[in-house]
Length: 578
Ligand code: DON
Image 1: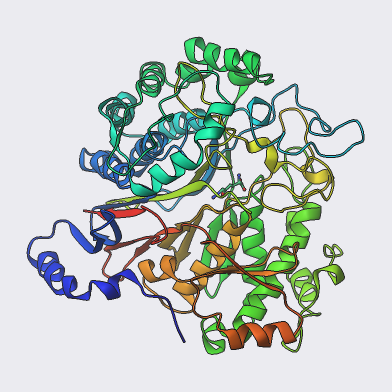
Image 2: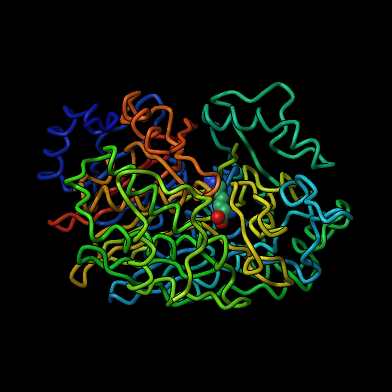
């Protein structure tokens, strides 16, 4: 068995030193610091932990905890900080989904997903022949859904926050004003997108640099600081009404977008009851629709439950087959049955019924692949991948697992003039036409068609796992259609393969989504040896190497009560505990 190098194995010698600190200083514990990237992949803490896609955002979250804020305060601060230091996905112009667990054990979810503007309609991305107009739902002002992030954060704080709102928003403002040191990964992404930034914007935004971005450059964002100040001073209204709303509507007018003042004013986030299930004695708490991710994850774990995965072996031939077949079946259901449950009757109970799950796996055999063309939805009883996930926990055990997004890299690429933030291109998550693949190759049907004020289906799958009534771990990731299968594999890594959090998130991954009918595996995944690939091909599977899958973050609660944070090695992601 090969599991690619885990960070804590690289820095094992540090362990002894930090264990010393652990016993005698009881302060900050950091293992496996990646010195080149100034990011921390494995961290321990007793009083709190934040794991996010960027060191600055994790630091700001921790600072809020240290100031006496709770995990909800730190979540708001981290979300706003990501909008500044991780503009490819962190946002105030997008939306997200999160799952929380309060210190008293009460659980819930918050849906702050974008929604279709009131002027949106079913065929808005089709030409006169009824064909999809390429890119219309992906780039520019018409691709933008009504943003949900600011309203979501405000509602979360109103409900559960402890510190003053102003105090929580301020660190993001300081970061935008004082400037941010651009990492190598960020510089590369900015450079790749310079043409798009110019094409979809009339004004010169902070992200344009004719000399090319390089590592160590300072990014200062005065317009974004101005917007955040309005949010700091006026809460939700600072974004959805007044000056910032006017700037958004002005941008829409200039660029033929359709979001109006009413769309902005009417946006409200929704607290929803979580989806609960049992996997090997643990309770999986996740997001209901408009997340497809939560439902698919639940289906897949139920299909896997009868199998001894540990015995099959980590990423062995049989393990890969089993997960592939489970994923194929779940994603076929996604295409047919899933959409915004406020608009379409999603048959959640039927899709999760034990009898349905058993029926679904009846055609599975280790002998050969079940081609996707032979699988339909069950009878009832290239890729741009930028979203981001973060996890927060405080000393009392309040915990939040949040995934937030602009959809594609930098969303629609439109920066609101004078307000300094990117708007999402979330409209592409609708099914613009039955069976026409979206940015992630996902297909859909009536359930996920466009309608005014409807929410587009999401793969985002924030999860909290409980065991015996106590919190066990938190997990989530970006990755478009691969989100759900990355979360699935990480949960299996922790529960079945008993990995620590850093190993669980760093481990190599693979993915199948029904259509296209192929197993995609990371090109760095050494478990996919030539021999294994040949064996799978003989059984009728199609295989394809690809770029990294997901950027998973997680926090595990150790038997001694300490927190173990794991940040994905695939990016600048950083775990900080204290
Ligand atoms: O909600 C969704 O499913 C997508 N908008 C998520 C996009 C994403 O994860 C891009 N990621 N890296």
